[in-house]
Length: 102
Image (cartoon, rainbow, N blue to C red; front, side):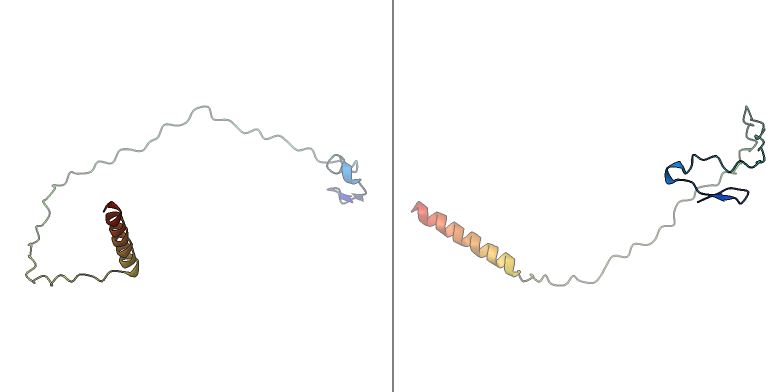
């Protein structure tokens, strides 16, 4: 079914949808727009803003307080299982190479 702008409905085949012109009723003719086209753009009228120069002052110096607390004693961290395993494997490889040379 296809419905016209006047309200009339008519049966239209599926392959003709979009190709059928209507029911034949008198339709209003639409006027074309007659807008004027601008040929040139108007120049901008913005003025540059004048800013008064300000004196640049040096940043305020903050007193440097040296840390007076003594550093804590260095404590060696315990090695992870992977590090211990890699170290053991390297030691075994070194022993194997040394035993092959003798």
